Image 1 (tube, rainbow, N blue to C red):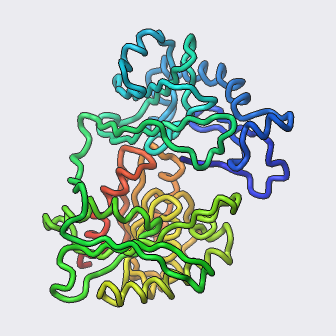
Image 2: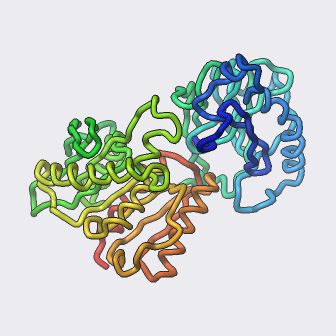
Image 3: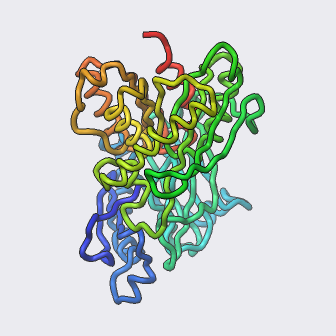
Length: 419
């Protein structure tokens, strides 16, 4: 989910408004609950959201009637009155229903909550259905909807719950009739090996998890290439897509070294993951994490996996993509290729064209994640203008692990292909 917070906000109880796709969205400090705001006599995020709803619905109704989005390349919220009884019939016994009408994707959820958000592939607040006390909806006009693959995750929120740490109540993946055929996913890794380890880090002053994936063919024909994966707890999911591709000859055999992201609810905002992955958040913590990866994890994994000493690849999604790009900028002597999916913040300039001339970049993002899409595209264009080797791809979908997992085999194959 895309989160917005004010760094060093002198008033953490404040509720603010941002505009996305023509919709006014209320938000506040993510580590403060609405219950805490109400106890202090302050406006809550839910109250602001209800106050904005009438204007948001009116503008969304106008967009629905216009039949075309203001920006033909962007997803926009639309709305039209609906009969609660007909919506309940569509749900039948389910809590979640998703369907398409022309270029509009409709999401309907049944449940009780103070607020409800969509996460994963589509990220917008859901609106309560007039005339009902338990129905919530979101309708999105989506260019090229027939080609889309969109994960739908419903995140209900009560007044005493933080925005962070909530669990989704329902989830499904919606595929358009002309969506690309997905790479097959194995139920589990059987030809390769997944290992979970914990490393006591001098650089971090704490222990950190590392997940290794040894692909089929390890130990045959010389050392394999290796790839550092940010948010390394996701390596198991990546391996279930990568392994069938390797066995089918559609992707190279690459060892994955997944460095787990930091989870520290007491760290406040910016969260510890952001501090380690984004250079501008906390330079000391970012540098410590970089030393941990290049000075501790990579030498340890080289010996354990028997992979080539270098150069390595580095991959990540979202904030992990930001870190992967930064790693390629700072250590081109170690990383020959960067796979960055849905990078939200990219460098304002290339550190040195000469230094990173040998670093290939595979960049990709979705059409339903406008900020990440623009940022990823901007970095691709910057590299291409500098004459550096870069491939840029966009999918019809959002900020979505379904797409990130599908992209990794193609990215590894392109990064390792002969020039």
